[in-house]
Image (cartoon, rainbow, N blue to C red; front, side, top):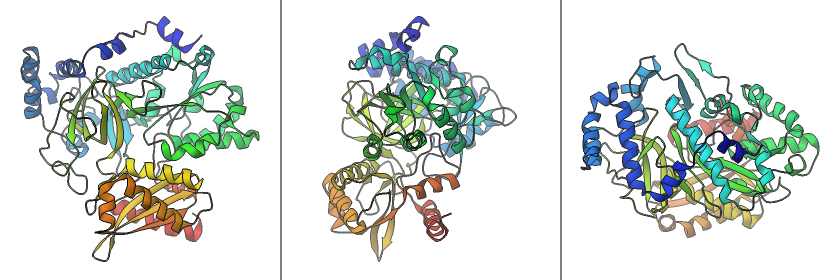
Length: 517
């Protein structure tokens, strides 16, 4: 039975989708905050920060946001964990959300070494499932998709569903937690299935998927680009075929998220017999924030009426220091106050008990009316040693342009700022298995960045004195991920490295080149 038909038969309503299209985002967000506050008003957090008072202002259409902003502080992970979430982790009830938190997603972003425990409540699991369904329903906007596609399987390549139990809670990768909660009516379509999904060892999981691949009719793939590409290469090699379509002829849709797909596109498409549709999602450990709702767009529509209230901090020198650290009392805006084309750091208040929480991502609105955004980087994943303000978005685009121009496949890269005499330089590590002149690659990347970013161009003639490029086999990046315990699942290689992490990386590369580790 087609997926869309199954969803509708099981009572899935499209009211929420229609609601977001017909009601302005401000009103939907106002109601969403009211729901969140009403649900959490009797928690320890809600009582400490006077949620009842904010609810009264919402009911009387007063400046509720002003009161919410004044009464509830902005939190980073360390702040909210040390003050509140550690109590939930210890098994206490009703701390930031009603009841006991039974699941915690393990996350370290892409730059920090310490593991974060992000609370995942039943309400959040339901919200993620609802948004996932809305994304599937949005496929009806893709007119070129044949009806038979909706009878095929969906391969979701994520973390293990075998979660660690720590006395009072389960912990694991968000993708593993989500997969372990898949509704019964969806299990017919879900691959690799429960047994393989439980496997913790990443290489063993890929081996099992490869063995089963030929017996599945896969139309959709979901996962992080690097790991999906590795899996497809493994399947193609195992069956001695030319493309993945020789195994899965009905594969037509790839849903990705977490990192920009652009650097992977060239290598990815070499594994295909014909073009497929790429759909970007914004699913973080803290919630399902946005997804690409319409074809022929490179932006995603924020979900403004399903368990998340958003605030936006202008990503500028007034609110963040040179290391990407937020100041104590930043300027914050609601969704009706943002401007198109400007960058904002995201704050989330959610049905998992995160309140005014800095998620670390930086976004830009391309359509305020439709709440359409693109992710441009992270608060700590940019380089501005001397005012060059180089974003991950700039880096991804430069790598994409250079890859096309030189006809090479760059699967991974990372950049760091380093001293250069009394001034500065950038050092790039490029992961490619193609033969290319490092000096040519260096000049091309530098050239593209000068075109893409005016601040960078100015600083290249001033304080940013040089750019260095070091070529590495792609496997070096994946071996680093394995050493760090971040192989597979939702883990991504950091595009920007700073301080201690960069020192660790350089030491690892020395050992890799000496012994191959």
